[in-house]
Length: 56
Image (cartoon, rainbow, N blue to C red; front, side, top):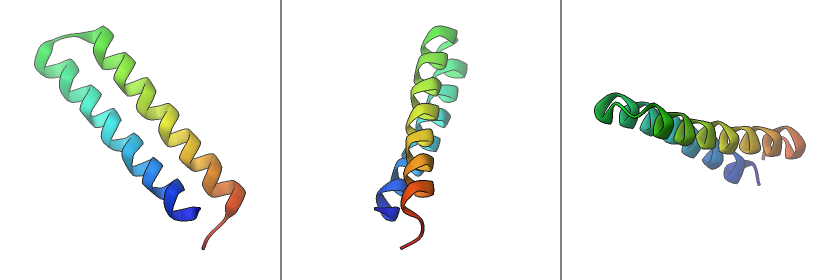
């Protein structure tokens, strides 16, 4: 379960960076915020799973 939590954290970080890229390249603040917040939520879920289940 720890590996799934770490995977979610990595995916969340990539999602946030993707949101920032879209915001800068397309000059679309709404899309940037939406994608970045989804990434933050995914990262948070991964972090909570890591805290709950601990290291492998």
